[in-house]
Image 1 (cartoon, rainbow, N blue to C red):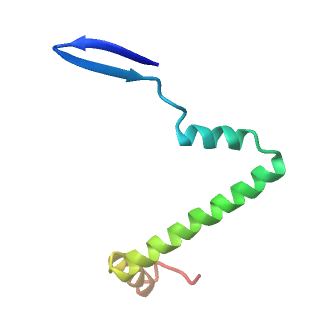
Image 2 (image 1 turned 60 degrees about the vertical axis):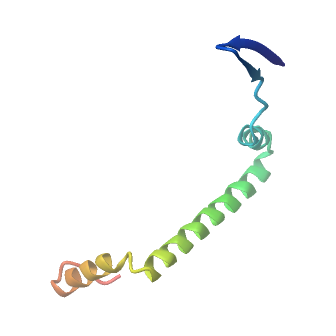
Length: 84
């Protein structure tokens, strides 16, 4: 649906918003049988952890974790950190 409105000499068009892709995905997830929902949840968790692992690896390679590593080593030397 298009609505024309003249405001300060301009024509403004307002269009009904279509359902967003995210809303479509949410609806599809809501309609999944329990077994498929469980499979989707596992796939999503694996994907999420994979992204986390890649981010940690990038941060480590970039030296962003060096201060934390140094702090942990100092805590270990000072006897404040036990073995894993």
